[in-house]
Length: 88
Image 1 (cartoon, rainbow, N blue to C red):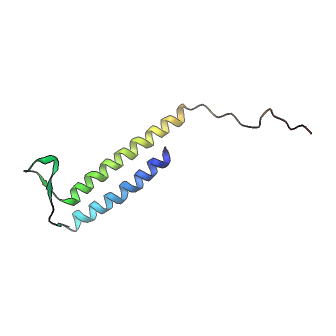
Image 2 (cartoon, rainbow, N blue to C red; image 1 turned 120 degrees about the vertical axis):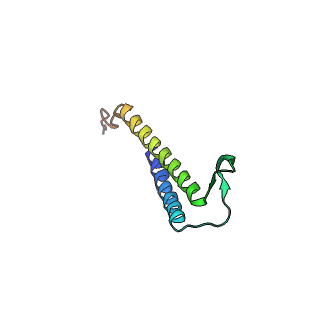
Image 3 (cartoon, helix red, strand yellow; image 1 turned 90 degrees about the vertical axis):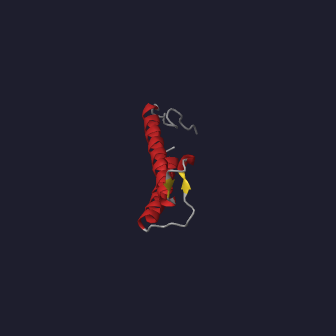
């Protein structure tokens, strides 16, 4: 689960970097759409990408915390090979 959280964190960093680039360079391809169908609140693609990156970051953080709590609750694994002696 920590591997999946790490993949999501890297993906979120890439999406956030792309959104930040779009916002800072004032990238306006001309296909701005209203968010959630509200025609009075028009957002650029860069802002939409930043929102998606923030949500991915939140999901990655929640998965990382869930994996950490799962690791703490798991009892220590028994060592294999203990008590079995090879006979010759």
